[in-house]
Amino acid sequence: MHRTPDKAPGYRRDIDGLRGLAVLLVVVFHAQLHGRLFPGGFIGVDVFFVISGYLITGLMRRDLERGCFSLADFWERRARRILPALVVMVLMVLAAGFVLMLPSDLGALGRSAVAQALMLANVHFWMEGGGYFAGPAEEKPLLHMWSLAVEEQFYLLMPFLCLGLAAWRGRHGDLRSFCLRVFAALFALSLGVSIAMVRVDAHWAFYWLPSRAWELLLGALLACAPDGGRLGRALSRWHGWVATAGLAGILAVGMVYDGKTPFPGLAALPPCLAAAMLIWAGGVQDRCT
Image 1: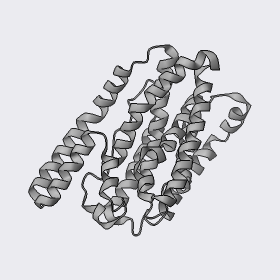
Image 2 (image 1 turned 90 degrees about the horizontal axis):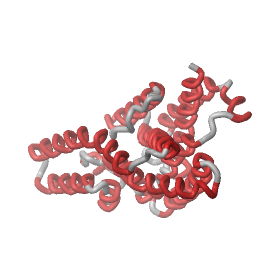
Image 3 (image 1 turned 135 degrees about the horizontal axis):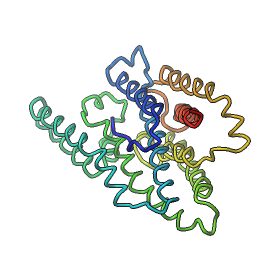
Image 4 (image 1 turned 30 degrees about the vertical axis):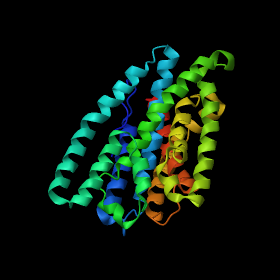
């Protein structure tokens, strides 16, 4: 799995716990236990997308509000967090492939490593065909890099969007509320693309950023949502129940879904909303302690 953003001064252990649950679901799915336990464990990637969207957008929003956001610093921090572990993992996989694989399979592995270096692993595996849940997918050691490529593409584009919104905020009120409206529109657009493309080309919908962006944008919406308000105060009294419902939702979806579930589209909405519920509830608890 990929690494997620830096620990901020407001580091939250509950998000690390949610990250651990997401990793466990994906590991169980890929460990061939999915025939009996958590056949929908692949939703752990979707939980990661929501977490990353929340943390990354929160970091950028706070820096922009303080007037200290820097593209160079942002990307440098992402590189320091991702590249060391990524380079070691890819080199180890290539070394193992050199010893264990046939020349044709080793060539395919090399091409996937190059695609990952170009932040295009998701496009590469889509072009290869077969789909994520197809039998040959089990023979692609770097297949899991598709999700990191989606996040890397988000990391490239989202800062420019936030900088643009910050430049316009003088005419549209405060940055937080303006971002919330724009992100909501983009969320709806991306979700619509995802729903439509699942029916037209399910493999495209699975791998490409336009049909996955709404999952990251759900986290972004959460990062820009107001902390208070009458509704927020009323809901905060029930944050424990919200967290329980979110956890139960993720586990239930992981047990019910399988490789035959049309995905992402509307099917990805329940686990993503459940993850958002857990993040929100954890934030309420964090503010109360």
